[in-house]
Length: 151
Image (tube, rainbow, N blue to C red; front, top):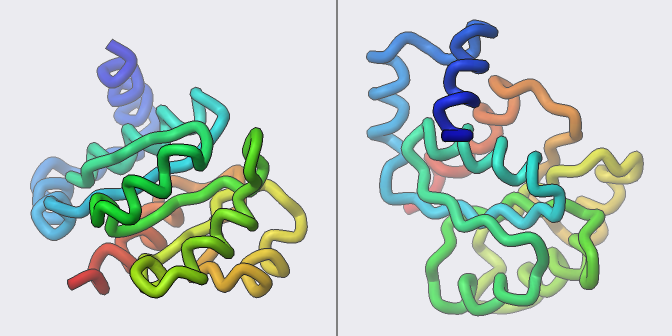
């Protein structure tokens, strides 16, 4: 139900591309799994819907507690990580990912309104940043870039 309302909202705002363009983009992204770690339910749902519309599979978590298992089980191709999480913060989790030999090649994009996001990116060796609030087209350009580079 929320999905249909969100699609209607996006179409009304002119955000959804023509069906054939959307279909072609979806084919290129199918089979890729994105781990979204975001503790704000509405933002997590919005990000998940945007990614699913593009043909990506989404694992959405509100904290890092179960994320380690998903990563080590090779269930994830890309991580979208908020910095301001309850419990372990996003920077220390990014440090963890980039410090593990079996995980360090998984792209991590920090998605945050944190004013120091660029500094945090350098400190934890994240691959990229998306500052909140974000433009949906810009968001998908960043995600698409990393999905296309995946083997």
